[in-house]
Image 1 (cartoon, one colour):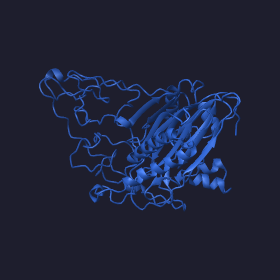
Image 2 (spheres, rainbow, N blue to C red):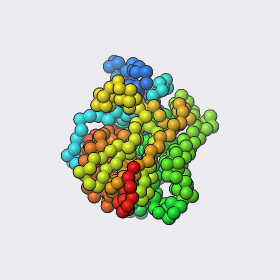
Image 3 (cartoon, rainbow, N blue to C red):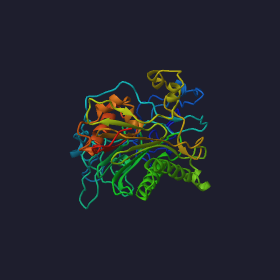
Image 4 (cartoon, one colour):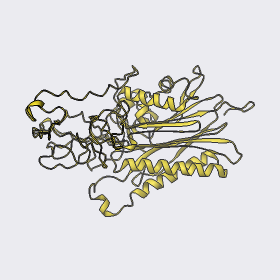
Length: 458
């Protein structure tokens, strides 16, 4: 994911970059209120593998203040707009109208990390402009705001102003705010496996996706599957890439395991299938590129785990991770994957220590991804035979940036995660949001069963 300087003039929506017309008060694409433009967030440049840093926009190019908003229209009859100034209605309306109550603050776990998560970028230099990486929230967080209740006639109520009706296009008819999308927050539980994905607190959409499921091996023993994908924001349609990859990999695994394919081979084949699904997104008609003709092909990272009665198989491309957390917390936890990233390369080459490498601004430049413009597809797979029960944590960097080491992740995972995986996944997402929520957050939890008596370990 990359960040690029924003344009100086308010010719585009500060939230979604949609072109604006003169006199617009709200963005027609996302419902952003153009009368109040927030302070420009701190930008960080796109990082290339060769270490070059594109020039940043000078201070003189900062966006000028927004033009004054047009005066509010008087409300018809005796129903003034909430918060309208006195004198815009009948004499009976001249008394100030209190604004609607603000949404309650997001609950905090008390864990706050000072280190800001660095979004990942593809290692290849990208000459094309990319969309801004961080966006201020334009409505109360749907996770803590009261659930939208149907108004009279079954119409949903806006989560921002709590008063306006939501039209068929998903916008509030009163305040113009776009309502939360389906992928802003997703949860799923399938047998012993559970996953939660959240947009986070800074991104304008969720570019992560996951697939979880259960099946049986050819001998009838159970198997659990979890796939997590993270879209690369410097590419076009990263949300579509992650969704296509997670679905293709999940379908491949759930079809191959019952046929007797070894789980490690099945994981390799699933990553290949996911790569093909993302590559196919680049085969689009010319008309589909009219709005972003210079952006890279859709791309994402992938990580997955297969858990059977005595075997744990992981596979990945990119910098999403798998952690092993034993139920007996006196035993050490472990990270089971190695990032395809600039920082990992520096550590592997002995040029930097891990702390120094991951503190560098180039740390999250990824060197492996799924996409038509990837250098070469190199699926990584590994198998393990744990000698005790535990929990497998499959996650994007939106989580592990706030619990990077295996010990930190083990500390964040609830003690009852194996018995309540969905609850534990929610807790981990909350941990990332309390830490800052600078990225999309996705985590899947797969309990590893107790090892049968007489089984050995590898």
